[in-house]
Image (tube, rainbow, N blue to C red):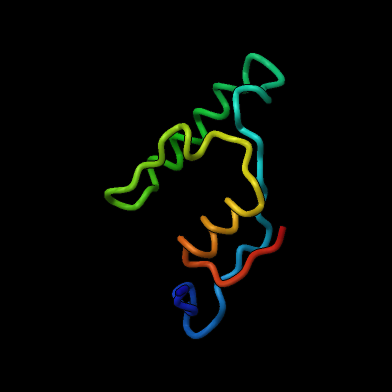
Length: 84
């Protein structure tokens, strides 16, 4: 069961004010620069990952569903609510 309040800061809710869901799968690349940009974004995720957790290309470079995004931000993360 989810523990509510993990994302609270000084008894205030932690909000993901605007969450963008992008299709970063290679099948959606619009130009030759798309892979370079996607890899740059992925490396920023790898560089800021919690110790012991580094997302694979398959985990982060895909066409994100609303359910998958919700699971990562709410269930696995410390955010109490988000806006899509």
